[in-house]
Length: 220
Ligand code: TYD
Image (cartoon, rainbow, N blue to C red; front, side, top):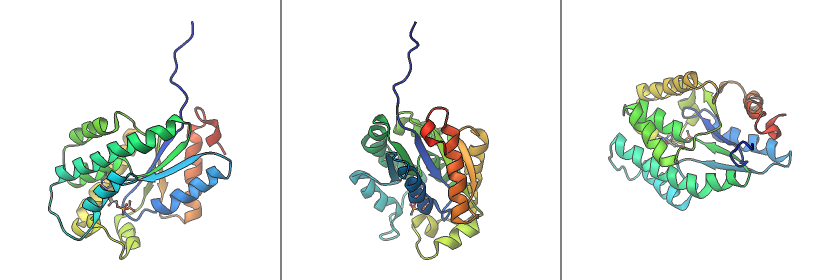
């Protein structure tokens, strides 16, 4: 008897972490190491990466004009952008076998809108399930670092999230990410983001190797 198996697809990998953890500098370097091996890599980010998502990005992140809204409204805006991103970019890419490297995803909503804005986590998780159609990452690389180090790194380049949320909010976000990693050690790899860029890249490459049983091309 033939055992039914899911059709082959590419790996879906997300990079998460508090603000200033260096996700956006790691992502192109990690993509470059994979592309150098001849692999197709799609790099993308949230919120954004589709015409709809980029419009939502400016609503949720721009500091001017300041538009008041609740944490729940924020959660729905991020989720709407995410749905479009999954349908328009992520699913088609993994369906053709590409490796998707995504800067932030559903775990960010759980950390920021859930823990940060104190919306019950079960509700935020259910929203993510709806928004993504149940697409969760195969691997999540968490770049962890102390809040003050991250915020200092961001310097002047601040979004509404840094401008209007206090230190305690960011501490809840960091603790939430670490909590998710503890709950799902198989999906999460924690990387010390205070290490230099080369050490962070090295650790991220090692983490990809965890998916080697299903995607041998990710082994170094
Ligand atoms: P961005 O400028 O991309 O920051 P970073 O480089 O730190 O990722 O801004 C993204 C901000 O949006 C960041 O502060 C986290 C927040 N965010 C949420 O609150 N919920 C979400 O679902 C996502 C994707 C991001």
